[in-house]
Amino acid sequence: MSTGPLKILLVDDHILFRQGLAALLVREHDLHIIGQAANGLEALALIAPQPPDLVIIDLEMPLLNGIDTIARARQRAPALQFLCVSAHGEQRRISAALDAGASGYLLKDCAVDELVKAVRTVAQGRSYLSPEIATAMVLSQRLTNAQHSIPAGARLSPRERQILQLLVEGLTTRAIADSMHISCKTVSTHREHIMSKLNLKGIAQLTRYALREGWL
Image (cartoon, rainbow, N blue to C red; front, side, top):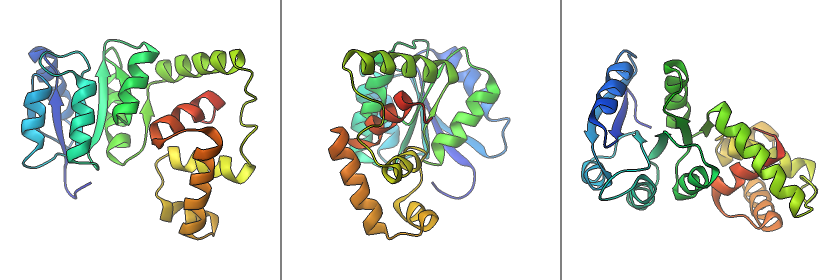
């Protein structure tokens, strides 16, 4: 993330919602709206020359939906952070957004304070899910867990569980190594073992696993 005000791109096909969102966010001294887009194609065109720090994006849009927009943009700018703000809270939509590369998900009826908190959290490279969404995902994952008779966390050692939690909280390999007084190579090895044991790939899947276990 760059120094100075946080540069934000708003992507939503409803102009009144975009303008309302912009009016709320510019009240914060550290947030700056650098552009607005009505669909995914417009968003990609704006991201291409100079990526912002954060994109606040809806999922259902014409021409190119939010999930595909996130996936394409992340290929071009891997460090770009995405916060989904949607009217829909179904787990399949949330899971698809996280798999595409989003780090946060809010419902459009959230409070302004929560929106600002989510923006700053995601901009720092950490994950943020609204309490309602986190609760729904935990319940759903616990049901899936019970159906498949998988004992929660049984496959991970205490140290692996600690490293997993720090990873999904957004800490870098170096920060984890320093906090646990181990080498970066050891952290990386543990991360590989964690993904291998759980048969998971990427931070999004690890985040959902941590949610299922009740660690987030």
